[in-house]
Image (cartoon, rainbow, N blue to C red; front, side):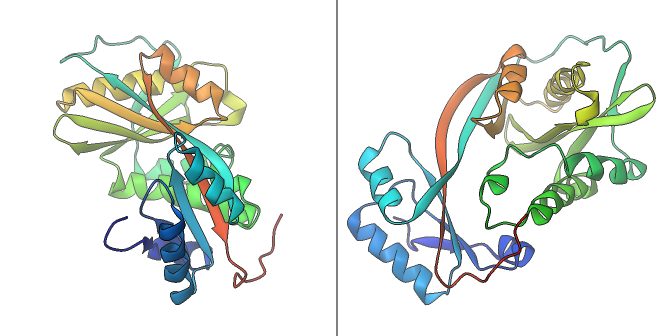
Length: 250
């Protein structure tokens, strides 16, 4: 365990109007579980996130016997890239940087295209707040949280996005990628991934990572087609405590 068993997540707590924390370790023992539960009780935590190492069956069994519920399989993929990526031809698809006028359109896409995520599979989170989470995420990305948001236009309208960040010397990360569900099957996602690799190489990155869900096989295949390989698999658990408020669900 770290100096503290868990971290209080102020932003998540404010957004979901529930006191939320995150366990700081990727495994549990009988002793560390007691420390975690004491930490949560002292701070009136209502929901605790736990990103678990899947190679620790004793820890996983302990979590599940104590009310932690599996909500997602977190898959991290990586790709090493050369100093230069050859330009790609997108045909009818134009990929460009976002502008302020794109934000309402991108928010509308984000509200409906990330429903494979763990929040939608925890029914203690109202679906409307889950939609709003991704609207907020892409809006903040356009406003500076990401280093660039690439937009895919099809037939003259914005139909997808890819938020990119530099996260260290030579390292880049795709933070959020989404395509309008009505525009699937036209190669927009693949074009955005390829355009992001060009942007990352221009910024000096040699390694690019992305996180997706184990249940999102379409996204995994898209990244694999662009040369990404699975780097790690982890398990997301949520534990809700009896002191949680009554939420309006779906």
